Length: 188
Image 1 (cartoon, helix red, strand yellow):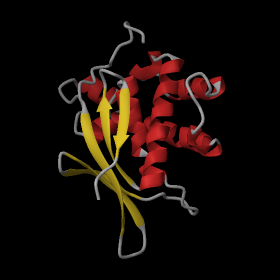
Image 2: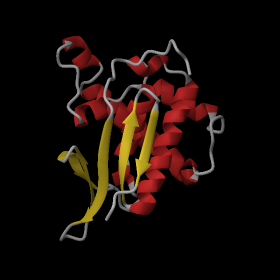
Image 3: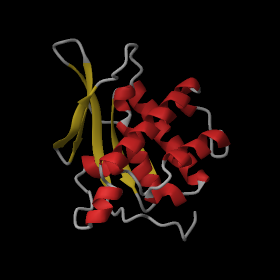
Image 4: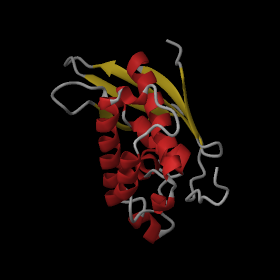
């Protein structure tokens, strides 16, 4: 890994629980908790044909763990940099969150066409995809991230997504020092 690559001030490591519940209206929701507290909103797929997009926050966690960047994760975990007004507005604010959500949706759409990169390893993802992803984030602190690091974040996020899709629940661990996102079973 690049020793010179900046970590963009991300200093948290977390274990979050992500799980699915069926409501009385027959809708399936994904809920999340961290340290016993609910975080974020109840998520559905928000599309006519269900595709498990409701588990997509795992992609944001992968960006945080591997790239050290995720305005969405910062907002979910209440780790926005409020003491730095310009950074809070420009890097952690609403526009940055929308850019990241769009990026996650774009990568999801591509990944869906390739079985969520199940058989892909580092070096296998399309250079065009990786360049498009970097272009998407242009102007934000993650812009300097090398393409191989984006690829690592995408592959780790999709690995965790496949686990959640298959098991409907899991506990994720973000380790920013090791640039890793891991997922494990939650006992029933």
